Image 1 (tube, rainbow, N blue to C red):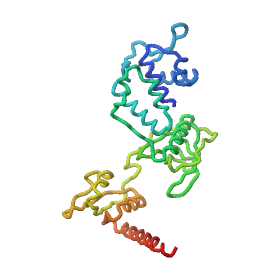
Image 2: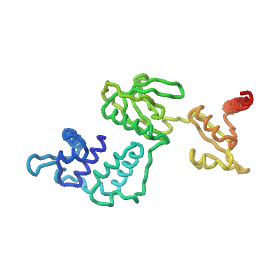
Image 3: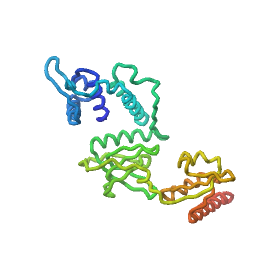
Image 4: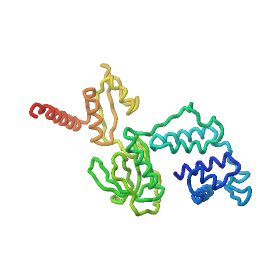
Length: 306
């Protein structure tokens, strides 16, 4: 991937006095032309790289440049490595592990088995997600329009988007892009996408900023909920809403108060508590829960007639 390769080239230049385009091309398994473009991009990013021809020539960072050449041998390097390892967990390959071997300097203190941060971005169905992540990464780099079938609570649709960002949040992967059908930016969950393919059409970059992924922006609090929860479910309230979302009653049960973003998700959440929660407010939601309970009773009560 382009960003990884740029990081690798920069690391090599920080650790060595000089290298050559053929050496870099062999190390990163790309053409010399690609390496030349990468060097040009690093220069545009403000890294003062110089090249010289002939015997003893090569690629190097200009003398006097103030960047510390041990920059990537510090704690920062270990954090970068932890991030690269995490990408291997979803990529379905050892690409990033191999990249680490290519960019780390000789010191064995950089990457060790005792690193304190381990990040695993894989999901339950990682065999299906990993190819999608890799495919969409390539589409973003190539500015290719993505087409796919999408399955959502509102129904099944066919979408075509200009992909801009791959996002990992809430234990799931998403792609953020400009939807040609809605003529607006949208975020799509990879688990709900199928028949993904690149169109022959390409797109020009829009003036787009990284999406605001704050909870309050994506899931604004709309429904206020009050409920009595059995003490054995305290761990769930703390995990999902924090320790300040309830008070302990005299009988030991918990009085929960909080907000939820939408009715459907809230109903599912309440049902997962089974008989360990009693909803107090809102009244209209209690009626819906009763309707669901009665329908479930009818479904299972009719088993004897089948």
